[in-house]
Image 1 (cartoon, protein in one colour):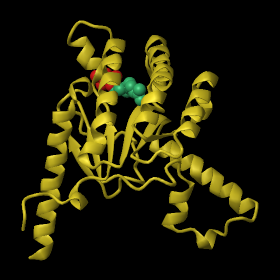
Image 2: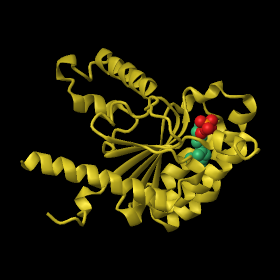
Image 3: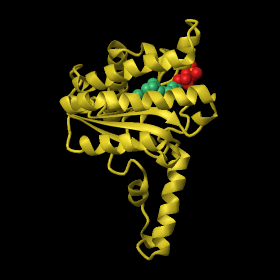
Image 4: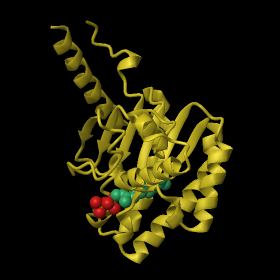
Length: 242
Ligand code: FPP
């Protein structure tokens, strides 16, 4: 068996829990928002190089349904970072042929941010080099709850028969309906938890937990992580063929 990984063995969909911005900043005597700003630099870098690593889908956890519990200053700062990122990146997304989608409960986000999100989704709708999904006010249980609510309404309206509900039906009601399941979930900064990120979609995903904080997760770190994913995949193949 060749040791060169075939493109099929590379992770087509990579999902990332971008953890450790706060600790990265605090360790340097900086305020937490400086860590998030550095985190945005890494988002730019990883989005830019993802296609070079055969990644077709990249999903990033930007803000969880639990993150509202942070200080008002941090929440306001993050929301302002998201607005600025969307405004500034639209041009790059068009140049690099990146389609952007957002998942999560938008109803609790500010009006301006929601408008920017819709505009960027519309503008990049026909791009195809990379599918970037940003999870914003996202929680896996919340996503499933909202899906079940909509399914309940569809049943009530006569458009859905409970007997016909399959796993595919449930998948089709999630925010990620038209996005394939992740092959690999990466969590940075040393926490070994999944934290309500894509619980339905990542049921068969590989997980890599790296001690590197998100602001330090540069392209070489991504390359190393993808290599460890391919190694696992190779072992899996070997044990099957015994
Ligand atoms: C986790 O670090 C990070 C977040 C809650 C925010 C993630 C946001 C970014 C990387 C900003 C850019 C995102 C986009 C889409 C432009 P933490 O604050 O939980 O770190 P800690 O665990 O060290 O406190």
